[in-house]
Image 1 (cartoon, each protein chain N blue to C red):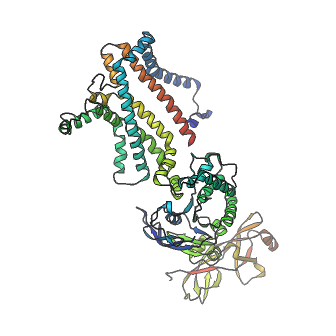
Image 2 (cartoon, rainbow over the protein chains, first blue to last red):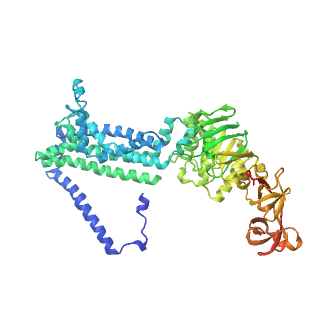
Image 3 (tube, rainbow over the protein chains, first blue to last red):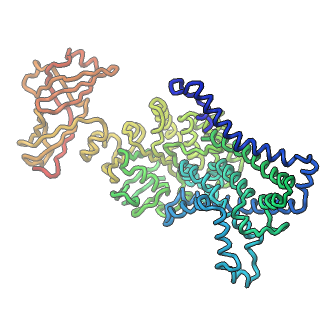
Amino acid sequence: MSGAATRRVPSAVREPAWVRVLLIGVAVAFLGLLVVVPLVAVFREALSRGPAAWLDAVRDEETLSAIRLTLLTACVSVTANGVFGVTAAWLIARYDFVGKGVLSALIDLPFSVSPVLSGLIFVLLFGRQGLLGPWLSAHDVRIIFAVPGVVLATTFVTFPFVAKEVLPLMQSQGSQEEEAALTLGASGWQVFLGVTLPKVKWGLLYGVILCNARAMGEFGAVSVVSGHVRGLTNTVPLHVEILYNEYNFAGAFAVASLLSLLALVTLGVKKVAERRQGGRT
Amino acid sequence: MSVTVEHLTRRFPGGSHPAAEDVSFHAPAGAVTALLGPSGSGKTTVLRAIAGLEEADAGRVSICGEDCTRMPPQRRGVGFVFQGYALFEHLTVRGNVGFGLRVRGVSRKERDARVDELLELVQLQGYGERYPSQLSGGQRQRVAFARALATRPRVLLLDEPFAALDTRVRVELRAWLRELHEQTHVTTLLVTHDQEEALELAQQVVVMHEGRVRQVGTSLEVYDRPATPFVASFIGNANVLRGHVQGGRAALGGLTLDAPGGAPDGARVHAFVRPHEVRIARAVEEPSGAHAVISALTRVGDSVKLSLQLAGRDTLMVHMAHAELEALGLTQGERVAVGIRNARLFVEEHAG
């Protein structure tokens, strides 16, 4: 990937200088307006009352609780989607079975459905008036407006990330190495751990990073199922909204700056994973 | 350590013909047996069925007399070498060669000793710490051989092992494989579409076409006494002449040859004549025989390829030493007398 991007364009198809300058200028201005300026604004606003105020806002008990819930949610959904994503990709790439087309189409579904709708689906399923509501309340299980709902909604919204990264890799690599391992006496599990997983590890890492970023940042679906119970079912993005609605701008931006930092770290790790993956193929 | 395949049939879903149909042969212990055929002839399917990578729909595969038809590939004790190397890119050469020993739980010390032994066998000492991406194609394939041999397989299965390599490397590795086999004497099955490779390496050749076995024999047998017109045209270059039987002789575009025994008058025949089995002389010296005109003449190193236009429409390709042609003093456009030293004739089945 990176090799192709740095290749020089032959002079015959190169645009005249003024066209190039114009195009680059437009692209830079666009990026600056939509990405750089907001990002700078977030950090400026977050630190507008000094680092001490920022630290206070972050160390607020409700903020810490939101961070804990976000970490727990990300942890569960990334693990679940990592396992599911690799399994689904492996099934689709290696085997022919009835319903294979449906499965590969379903993997994309959360991307094409509005997150709000995703949240509503869970309310319709598990809510008090929902399909499974009576059974759940009879057994004293709370899903909607509780932590399980937040985790479920997040997992649903983020489940395509790993599968979508790993599947094309597995499909393009074929299965000859796995066959070689089989003839050498490796068991199915040894083949998976010793051959299949190493072959896709950078793609898997890339998918996990994207999945994690989205899990921590998800707003729409979580907003519907969370119920915004302070200190209990508020994730970091929801907490930012609450602080903002209470005109606590410094607090809102301080917490928002945490999410922005996460985005920057994700970007950095993603670049490394991309480079490693590009270098191997 | 022999391999026996009996009535093996394999159909792929969606395929109109079976990939392999009623395939039977015996690969003797310690020898190299080549499965030779054009692409799509089912030879790779048969090899994969022996390895257990492909299921047999019908028939039996036995290794050393033991029925392996339903045995998983891990337990068959075969070494498999793929056309595309199929090395583990994330492991070093040592890691690749030692993989089979590691998954079998062989101790590190024993493994290291065996890996060293194999790296020496494939002449790659000093390459152990490299990764496959740092090796040339020929070196990679030798690593694949070492990896397949490390677990002391009962049978070595080679699927077009040299097809992805340059001509020069291919010829080198072919000679190397001959030596390797002389050292190890592992029963080997070699799938190839390259008849030269098969004839040079194999003691026995199984010729396949359209999923079926057409002939089993030594390399000389399939070359000199092909059992079917397909084998005659596939093994070695051959001119094909068509004609019919007349009074016990086959008349082929101005040439006459002895007809195959028992062929009735009027039967249509095909004759396969190899380019070096045509004898030519100056027309003036043999005025009575069949004549032809040299329509093209190409010198390739110290041999010459001639194209002869016979009295009918047929063209004969002839190979001869350049010195021989010079002695005759022939050039393009001259008339020559043509004789056939040797030919294989087949009577067409639906004659008349």
